Length: 397
Image 1: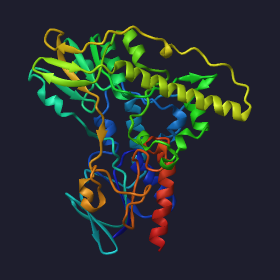
Image 2: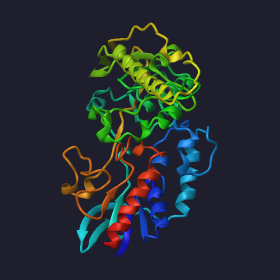
Image 3: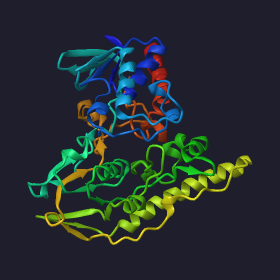
Image 4: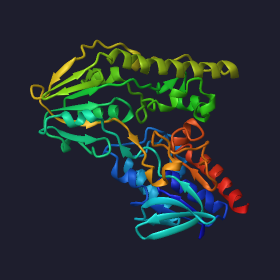
């Protein structure tokens, strides 16, 4: 029986391994595929991080203003994994209590550990709505996880469903590939790239925005909202996509043969983005006022500019030349292997912060695990350090 088993060798699991090693805790990291598997197999070719270099120190030294490509992230994760006790191809299919710890069932046999850190994440299982099954058989489908480049899809128009981070960037990728794009939108916030002389994310980090805890939120539904939109090194918005040539439609609500229908929510989706941008600017303005800083006035933001729209209420797929759909409808995690006593009705792990309701079991890499940044590269090292401290204390007891 080893002291600790970490499940998952993505960035959260590798952060856990580094923190445990720093505390001289004997451990092993079990990975179902290869280290960084989701980053290898679920990113499109032109993908870049939308978090800037100074937020990604987990990946090693890099320019503070860099936006790493997907390939660069994988290379950096490989280097991190080389320094960790990672066992690739070791999928954990069941976790069960065993003696003074746990048995982790794998295809290669059981691993016994006194403590377990689950770092498989909650953003790697594609979610596709039931409406997808109603499309004509001739239409090709990809989820964000399997989309790579415009050439994967049949020629002609592409319907992109979902306008959060991935949907907006994939719509841009398709436009750059010469495709006509219809984007079925959803209400998502957006972050102004700059405000009053600095990148907005820098201001927000200093204001404590990234360290907000679930208990700090006046409305807990914020934790279920999609991450606000921002592109690598620039702003991004629905109006900007419309000006670039994307046809904005409302939420996809029905499919009947070759005809699809949308609701009339485009204006509301744009308003949701604008409202988040306004709140972000107000938060920055308050920091400047409270600290008595001499900051320049707000810069003009092209994403605030209005755009004339005539959203379609329906679309004839064949008449419009739609041969493919990209479902940018989000991800979840798969936690059934933990057993029914550790998973709630929503399929998510039962927990109090990072701790499971049983001794010797913790989580890492989940959105809002302890803070707003818990699901980001920025937040993994801090959460990993706290969990590693808890593991060491548990072993000592």
